[in-house]
Image 1 (cartoon, rainbow, N blue to C red):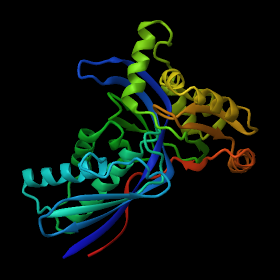
Image 2 (cartoon, rainbow, N blue to C red):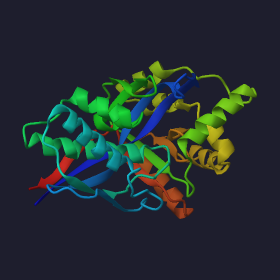
Image 3 (cartoon, rainbow, N blue to C red):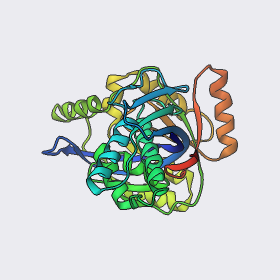
Image 4 (cartoon, rainbow, N blue to C red):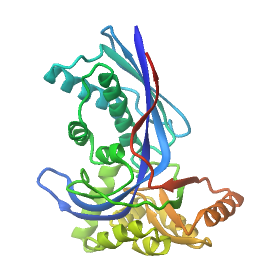
Length: 314
């Protein structure tokens, strides 16, 4: 006997990202502003009563190269949730099959894997809720933080200021919709390598010290002002990302020159580049211009909701 639950979770961008020095635990202190986008991956989980091997499958436009073993973040999320169930006496499932639809670039700086983990957590918690054994949001966020720095925000969604390694969140009231265009690159860029390169560049004096201005980005989001937010976009990881993938600089320049663009930024650790548009009409016009040049891109709006259940049956 099995039970199917499907959940979705949003991609994210860092409208502002200031990176401090490496900490004693190996992570870097961050000061950031997250924005969730309506580019959402989905995870369908089949919960099986009998014990057996867990499994992961992946399809969708960005499924290439996504691991389908126990290292997959959705698989790790389900394993962590199940372990916590066992520790707290909750009625966990026997085994699970997670089927991922990858609509967000993998290793692209948009937290596609973290979104999968958040969706899996939401699906697993829905399974528990049907049995009167769900975790509350604080407990779920604690489990999310153990999986990765971006997973708690994928659960929360909307817009938020982040600190610590990104897992400490303060929601930002951002009721206005912003329009974005994301240009992914064919070759992914693993996050640890980008942080390591930033450290090397700072040691050599070839990268700037941590940028300031998180408060201005947050205020622009609250005000719903794309011009103001465009001017506040900043990312300390842009310099090392461009060193590792020189094509990023060309994409930044190309997007910056499009009419209606108020600002551009490297998304997270890259290599995806994101442009903010003045509005929906400007977004469509910029999309047509990119399409005429053969530039693959994604249209998005945000802030968007966090991870949520979108379907399920016993």
